[in-house]
Amino acid sequence: MLRTILTFGIIAGIIISALMLITIPFVGEEIDFNAAELLGYISMIVALSTIFIGIKNYRDKEMNGVISFGKAFQLGLLITLVASTIYVTSWMIYINTSDTDFTESYTAYMKEELEKSAESEEMVDARLAEIENFSEMYKNPFIQIGFTFLEIFPVGLLVSLIAATLLKRSTAA
Image 1: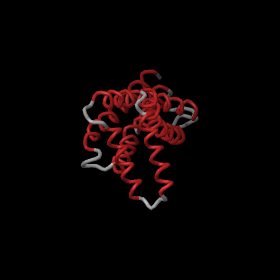
Image 2 (image 1 turned 90 degrees about the vertical axis):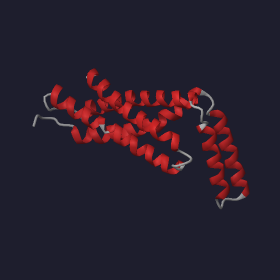
Image 3 (image 1 turned 45 degrees about the horizontal axis):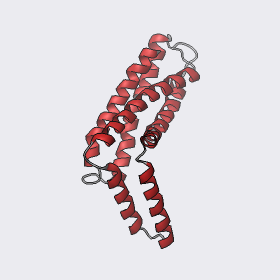
């Protein structure tokens, strides 16, 4: 089981990290932040499709075609943890070593969008204060790690639930 977890988790982690590192330099200029967010989640789903492949591979090759929902879900979550760890590590290396200040660019974008909105002045001021607070908080590496993990892990959780539901089998085919 460990071999399956590591193999498919590393593959997923490399795919999502590579896609992130390829596209992130274009975010804010060639790709706006909303499109980048959508592209990021699509990339995560593509990369985490390895969960489905990993569970099926394990079921068919190691478990003689039989796997419970619980075992399949566990396998999916562990693959997700490996992929998430690689993704978070890649992001931390990028955000803390690149010349661009992603956080500053994103904060400026959020402020611009908020100021263009039809919200009341009080609401805009309150949201601007929240954005400034978050920007300051995000300088803490533990906060960076937590938020980055929360970007990818729920996607892997959902993919794991779907894959475990579709691939569970109580008798060999």
